[in-house]
Image (cartoon, rainbow, N blue to C red; front, top):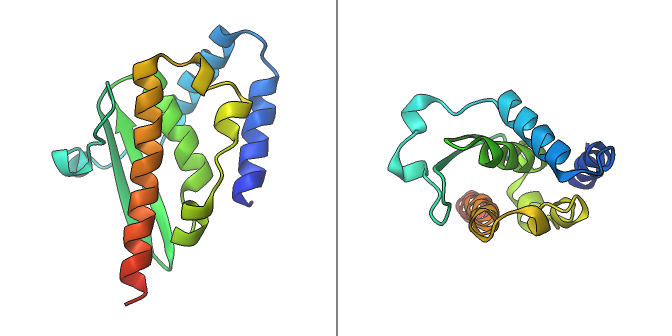
Length: 141
């Protein structure tokens, strides 16, 4: 599936619910299904700056694609990072860098997060794209 196809699928899954409490529960379910980061990567090196809760994100670059694993100590945040990984993991650096993450606004996520969680979301996206830029730069050498 392309990045846009995955995003469209997420938008469709969230469109089933009108109430944001139901959407939060869906986010929590996504977080429960997250393939958790190996505990050896739950270090300061993989901690995302700018998040209110702790979020660890570990990239692996193999075969020209980046695969991410993550974890968080907050259940909603864990669901958010699970969505980002679902969309952006197992992609090339160029795909990640150029991705327009429209699903965030289409499902109403940004509008329904507290300001600190919204900042955390932006920090997660920024970190994922920074990893992609770094891998893209090193793979061109």
